[in-house]
Amino acid sequence: RLEGTTTALQQLLGCSAEGDELVAAVRSVVAKAGEAEEERLAAVASLQAAEQQSAQLRESAAALEAASVAARRDADQAQGRAQAAQSQLEQAQRCAEEEQVQKQTAQD
Image 1 (cartoon, rainbow, N blue to C red):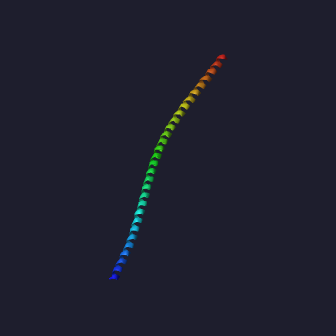
Image 2: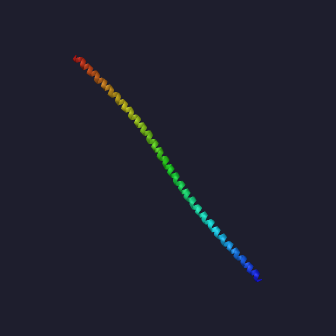
Image 3: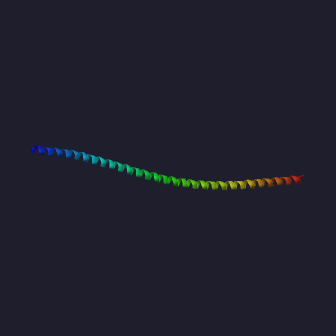
């Protein structure tokens, strides 16, 4: 009977040791799952920040494109005005030359 009790106690102690190992393994798995969840949340936050930055960059690119279009339009208008001024200057020079010729002819 003592041997049976001893054997039963040894079995219980063995089960207890296995139970402790199982508890330690479960705790380790839970801890790793917690770390994985923290990493996942950090990755989600990083992705959200990247998406926000990407949206801001798209907005900036659109604003730069609009400014570029406006600058090209302004440059085209300025070139048109410069050409008109050049034509007026050439016309004024021709008129001045004609007046000079007329004066010279009148003096002769």
